[in-house]
Image (cartoon, rainbow, N blue to C red; front, side, top):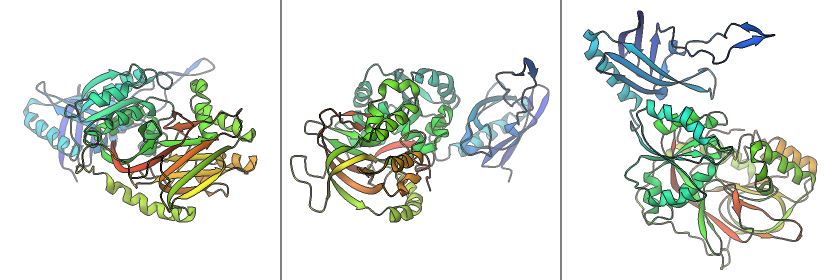
Length: 495
């Protein structure tokens, strides 16, 4: 159904614009398609550039339209992020800034045309968001600044977003910024980094006297600028979650999605986690390979292989408040729980102040009914996100806001072949079906790393960062945080 149409020109070329309420179709602009950047050669003989389909012949969907504006110079300007391959899932997107001349006699019609489109494009989303942008120039492979300047900033500018850009200068700087930021001055705090700065921002918010209000009022916007980017790929997938321009689109068009956060308590401190708590060979693979960060995701694979072939195991004393322990029922419940997960996108503003734990302190016994496990394990890995990195769908049944932590446990005694099989299938999430993998959903847990061999160093990782290898406990706080999301839930991981 045609809602509005407008005749325009590109030079002497006639162009027809048609909008049907869901997308904008542009016909006649044969110069719009992006040309390949680099010429191809075969044995030093130049080849003609590959054929590039003109994406403007297809409707540009509302979600991809950033701005349509008619100005006093009789020019209509259209900015959009258009998929390079619209028929493919997780296609890369390209920013188009198109300009067309309008006959002065059609000025009133052009004004209404652009206004009608913009009212639909931002129907349920705030236009021109005010963004506090934090860039970590040191994280990952040090590419965050370049990513922002070349790929993200142009998209934000095209969408008429206001930006206050700040570079983090040291570890913990994100905590200080979040503690001091005026939550009424911005609509989102955007991190261009890995997961480390996200962790800092969350903890900065939750150290404020108005912790609950601050973390809800200023939702996170996530742009991948590190090596892991677990939260980003868990929301958008392993391709789009690493696409700076598509994640910028999520910031622009996304709505606040409630997601769980976990309090982590030691005897001398308490802070918050949004990703994972990790002990055993996977913690070793994450932390003992930091000197190989230049290798990207490959470093953790090398660390895992070292541990598996070395037959390593780790001792622990642990207790869990288990809600679900049957892998089969967890798998069967997943589709229903997934369909229901986007119902928790609304942020509850009814409670303010700081966050208080409900479980007993470390100095007291665990509550009756908790499951106690004292054993040697290979893997103890809890998570609030399905993907911990590309190719690591470790917790395929994770939900953003179910109030539960997913726990994967592999005890000592599994053969090298079985362990290799688990990590060979973790990219698809099917490793959880292995006989050596236990999978639980828990509300809280307490863990004490035990050192039996003084020559073996214990590692504990919280959100991918070093944590002390001494007793700690974790409790989930349901729907405490808020992050901008296009879908209002994590990407489906049905296996």
